[in-house]
Amino acid sequence: MMVSFIQSNYMGFGSGVVLPEWGVSLQNRGFGFSLDPDHANGVAPRKRPFHTIIPGFLTKDGAPVMSFGVMGGNMQPQGHVQTLVRMLDFAQNPQAACDAPRWRFDQGLSINLEPGNPPGLLDGLAALGHEVAVLHDTYQDFGAGQFIWRMGDPAVEGYAAASDPRRDGQAVVS
Image 1 (cartoon, one colour):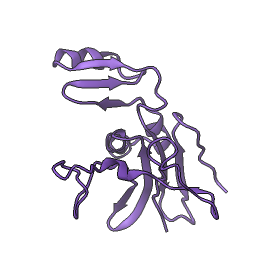
Image 2: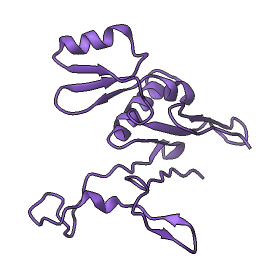
Image 3: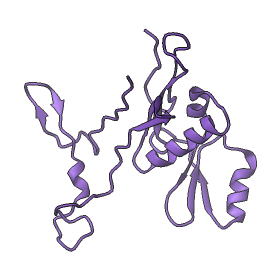
């Protein structure tokens, strides 16, 4: 059995409301809604504001292969794609894919790079008309992922796990 789960309080300490009997802080994902009925995210039935809780799950031939997630706002889907491409197309193990430098699309032609990207990438993107900046504080800007890859029969081949060096975390075998 595999589960993919991302916990997030959203902004700051979430809603600021803690259930006293449990000590659990409640999230404030409702922040994405607007009380303006004409707004695209106006509170109404069947509305879906921009949301960034995207736990990932990979299957092959209907069987579970990997539970994973890259947290970090709009970096989540970008981080998912970047790490999956590294693992599936370039055969990197989960930790190598997680450790690798990332890029982030912001808006328009604005792209941010982490240090360590290939040397010609910045110049190549700039030549295409992109506004490129290298960000050196990568703690919040490029997401953070955890990955558990099922190597085959868990009783025989086991699992490979990875934890992103951009945040606190650790992959541990028990």
